[in-house]
Image (cartoon, rainbow, N blue to C red; front, side):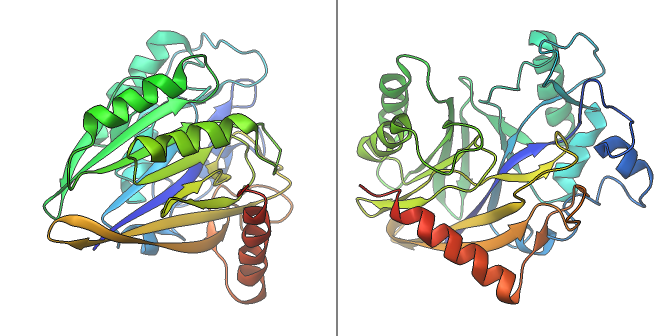
Length: 300
């Protein structure tokens, strides 16, 4: 069995005008012990016991100051890539609307920071290929919406798909703040499964959306936020660690099984503490019920 964990938007940094201000991620980390281990410390026990953890890296890791968006540009220091290592996150998606917040130079700095920390990345034309327990696992990432994305993605999936290969497709898609799906999400998600993907992972709305079972595979439409430095006073802090367990038979996927692990991406109700926590008891059941209700609208 191969277990893959996926988490949502990880903004490891501050908005450009708020760096170091009270309530910012950098100010919060300055006040804690072992800042590089702190953000994932309450969830690492889960992420360290899978075969692969995938996150969406929402923002850049650079020292540059030439931001592109005067309202929402997210930047963390290059050495903050160590947070991912300490959190047992092995792979990040860079196909999102914040990867170039500090231009192409900032994007290249981000890739260099990840490489220095030995954290792999994919998206925007970069494919991650690895072998896990004798099985080839391929990750592809896309920014949903641009014309031609469906056709390009399906060509890529068919190129990578081989007998026994697990192809996982990640999309940064949907409408921010909306629990309901945009029609484009159905088209792209189902199109990926039709082309041969084993799993589709989504994010960008910053809230949870439903999970669809389609042709025996799963489309996770939005995982919400996770370690999220871009909002110091968030509203809905519900999130998930989504796990897909690929059960193998002779090196091929015989069946898949999903495991939902409810999380709040801040343990503080009034202000973001940038430290996701596992939920238990009534709160855990509430989030599971919420996902189940949202999932009714994900199938049509």
